[in-house]
Image 1 (tube, rainbow, N blue to C red):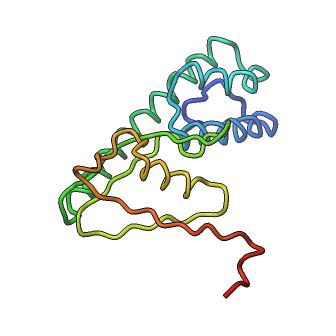
Image 2: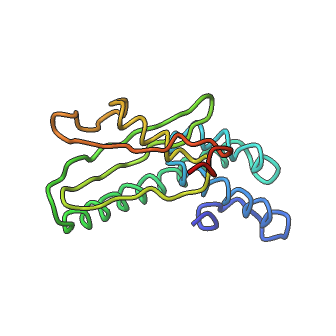
Length: 167
């Protein structure tokens, strides 16, 4: 996609390497669902400045951003079609962000829960599993149903490593 939009890029090894790096930056912006035009220009313009003019770079950033905005919208629609097939009453369909301390753990994360289904959280240490569960248990998660609508139970142990050997 980037090669078709980057008409100003020459066919040499250096320009290809710059465009390859810019493609990783664009992939990161898409993965984080950051589609603000200013963020795209700020992220890729410094690298493209060595192979193109400011006007070419601005046009390129706008076209690539528009392409991925459309791509994300189409992907969201296809995900919505799949979710319509799932069984059970929809209990929660919310998008939220979650931070702990100064670190963003989950950004623009979508949570979709249906009655009669079982769910689990899997991931390495430090990614926010317990923080998410505590936020749900404490009613701090935006868009999550109130305790009147949905009962949640969060069970956690309070064992310290040195107490693990006790009977």
